[in-house]
Length: 94
Image 1: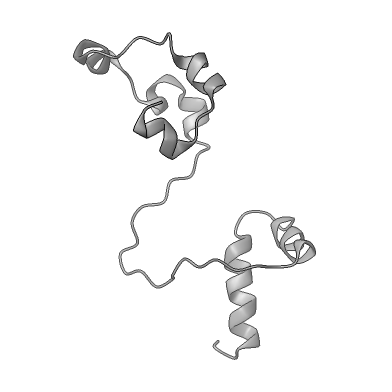
Image 2: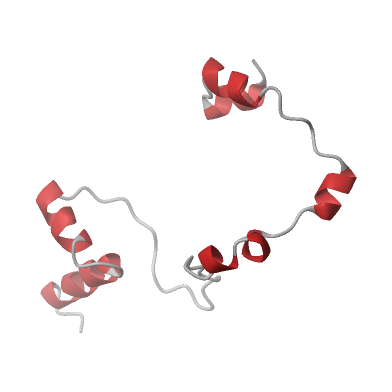
């Protein structure tokens, strides 16, 4: 097994499933098209965030009760920002 497969922990079944895929040549890469060119209807639904101009937030790992997390996620997109807003209110930072 290669170093790459050990690090990613691919199974033997994963490797067998892709073992017959040919290697791409420079010509293949030159002919390749971007996802948004091939699937424009799907591409517009994907949100892409750019790099923050002035990073104001820091990524963290936090353990929450499943019910709390489910309740926030049920409110839809932006649930992480709502958690941040609620914590700011509780800490009187607004």
